[in-house]
Image (cartoon, rainbow, N blue to C red):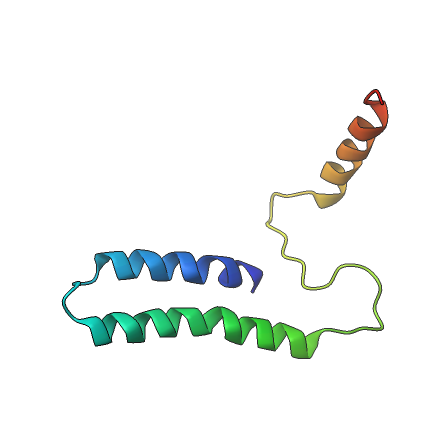
Length: 83
């Protein structure tokens, strides 16, 4: 879901670059459609947000990623750095 929020405008801009430049109304409708996708995603996530839960919500994890290992290594690097 969060990937769609990030990549929809990027894909929309690539589509707009490939479209014919002389059809202005089509370009505007396409730009509007691709800009409404993130708005819809944000509204969906906003309605599902739970203010009583502490911690991260709406986290995407890829199959090969290990979030806890990366945060642990960052913390150990940060504590070992000189002040």
